[in-house]
Image 1: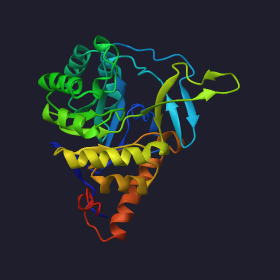
Image 2: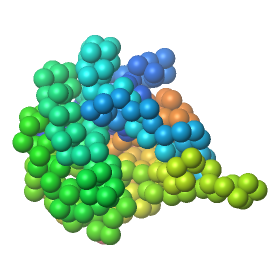
Image 3: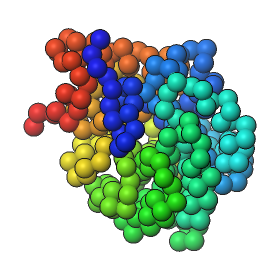
Length: 303
């Protein structure tokens, strides 16, 4: 078996296969399907300072080669996570990241600070695709200034691995990546979902209660690959790629484009064992091409 270990900042992962926030619950939901200890890392569902009920139903819709979701960060808040969820996942033999979301910079600061002292949570993934309520609802991650502000504020209070998740709904993704890197991001993950919508023509109504939602799945993969490649060319910190990864070949394409690790999202809903097949497929690819180390193919796209 080839060496599959990769490094995100100061954190060592046993392999580059991770799960995307909101698609793998807290990991406990998948114990009947996968060996959690084989996964490189788990990003648990979005966590906010206070409990959120999420958006009204319907909030998910199937689309050609993908799906739309507008769940709305439903969760019971960071204190509930610390008191009730953390004890059930702390003994997982994998790296656990908490996806942190907020409506104000203060929300991010308080939530991140509360997670500082959980020894089995070596990092957080900062979701800056959230709307900044103090700036009229514009997402933090859609401007260099607001992206830099929230990362700078969290970096001042959070001492562990800080991964920042970028929104693809921007003109220049590399510019945003450079802004968050300059403010202390240890790694950068992308892409979050693309803004889309679905319409029921017979009813002449939107399918989602929120009208628009986040598009994920195979449909977004070419865009995700392009953005991962652009960001990997621009920054010095590790990049974690995601967006439409359904199998090992997809994952390898992201590694070749410059991703140090990958996250699997929508595919978990279709095949709850997909992380295992992707992991095995990466190893098989390395052996077939006579590579002894997965790091030998990272960023090795031949232009």
